[in-house]
Image (cartoon, rainbow, N blue to C red; front, side, top):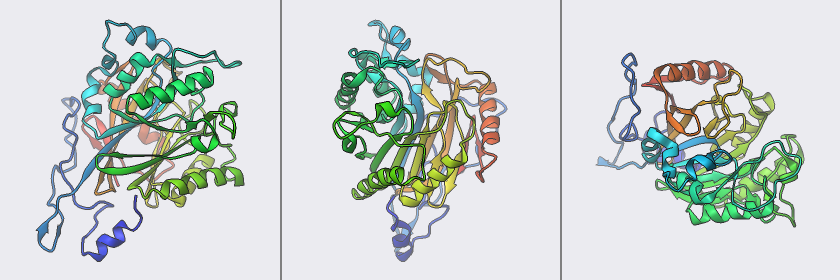
Length: 386
């Protein structure tokens, strides 16, 4: 987000409320079903537009959905790769919600290829057939895919190259991999809903997949987040992204351990460092469970966005088959709110039941205890006003 925006608007005599300038229609056009006992949302649907010199000004509203780990491979190939099956059905009745947004960002936790050999000494290998997986991602309105993770090279460099080619052919932006380290660390720059976006992607998992000066791979960083090498590499990438003068700078980071409900202190500190260096929104993933939203300075940290779709099943009592779509709304490039829309994963996606939605609301509030984040009830989900 352009850091001088508030100062400029203030000088022009425009008043900023709650980090946003003016408002427009409250919600994406399609709402999920509302339970009979669900209270109405506390948000108003419209407020007067901001005016400058008594002239009504139209304001640009953009809503981007942030989803977590997205694994469109392995056993899902046998379900949605059948020629008689529409790949779009992977999203079920949740698809209209995804399509109502200006775009969806996710972490693509698999390669998209029919080639390559299994990387040795790995327990899990995730690979999806691009013939159905790319149409499925398009049907889910996936605009950007983070590729820096510990499964991007499960079938070697040839499958990684196929993944990049398949996403390019499908019109899906991506960052976090490349033919060498410089390419893997380069920002993706594109527009979503009228906003200029710069996105960088890094993973602290699986050094064996790291791109080097002469080897393709992922943008890998050490978990020594406050170490000089990690901060040099990530800091350089942020500066490259800032040089494009984006409206919003996103760092999509595959960080921390799997199956934990709260971020470690070192991750919280690293998220703060990212914002201090100029990142507007940190898009966290890897834990496979939703974690807290944190507002820090002018930035937003989504500590973990859970999963978007997969075949992982249920891990212990963590409820990883239930997740949120984090819908971030900006007005004229300034954060306004985040709406959390619940859904259920079972080899595909569907809206939650009332009991599942209630479990998610209670659980996320509990997982947010260390932070000063206020969640408002909004139909079956939650809203954070920014």
